[in-house]
Length: 289
Image (cartoon, rainbow, N blue to C red; front, side):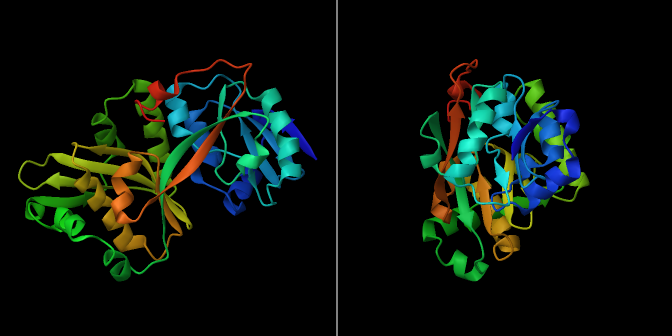
């Protein structure tokens, strides 16, 4: 049985357990992550938390949408048509935002009654030995990463969240939400940053903050000085340390920068509810949706 429950009735430990063990779980679904972005939310729950669906209980703001790009449903059961036909009417009834970032593991064939907007994320499937992986790099890519100018830069990690957000030309609301996520993630041992800086001046040339789980590593935020090779070098470092451990590495940021490193583009969808207030997708994503 599916039912809607308000925020104050959500059992946090059961909620997190479902997201953790769901075949389609991701870090955006955890209670602490949602709380860092939304003041509160509702929930659609199946039986004793076999399936959980975050319900957005007020019109979503563009900065919140950028941080909640792939939500539920999360389930330990198969998200088949029968199950989705029970979830979606409840979601439409209680969700108060025009856009709902549906999980990419939900088949688009189950969403035919709704307007379905497609976006893309960049995904690298792991489980590969780094030596074998790096053999697929082109000579041009290797030269960009380790050729001319490499001796003038250094890799660094552990920069404070304040340093990262200071580099961003973003709204105060977005920066504050990022700070909450990053500090929560670091406290739980699932957040870390890697970056590239100029050896001489100390200028940060690129930096990314990542969220890690046993099965995936996701880029939360990215800054570069305009040269994609520095960001590629950051991901190469991720591969060196994690290519055989994590099942995938993914990002929603500058998705075309990483294709020559073996990343594939994967569709992610949003469903839209006509009765809600819309906002501009392109404005929310700085021109890229």
